[in-house]
Image (cartoon, rainbow, N blue to C red):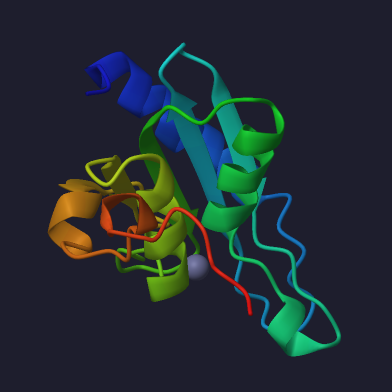
Length: 142
Ligand SMILES: [Zn+2]
């Protein structure tokens, strides 16, 4: 659980990260900020590409940057966009977030500053999780 103060900071960081979005095609800016267990906050923004399918969401950008810094124990994420409604993470981002904490807190915020607290467990109750599957220890080859 993030504290009320940490949530407020996460929202401010997500809004700040949104300003750095690279979205020349959609003009739809998104920012995210993730809180690691050690208190570190890592930002991310959406980064679009001329080859549209290579675009990365703010949430995954933040998670990958966190992992690159050795932060894989993630507690909470705030997500900010220019939309007047709350923007929940897309399916791909939900799966990626669940890798690092299937119960992660999610703080959604609108362009007007309204916030909504939810959780990944609520938004994505049944992720694919190889850690929970029975797998053979080795694959025998002919
Ligand atoms: Zn996404």
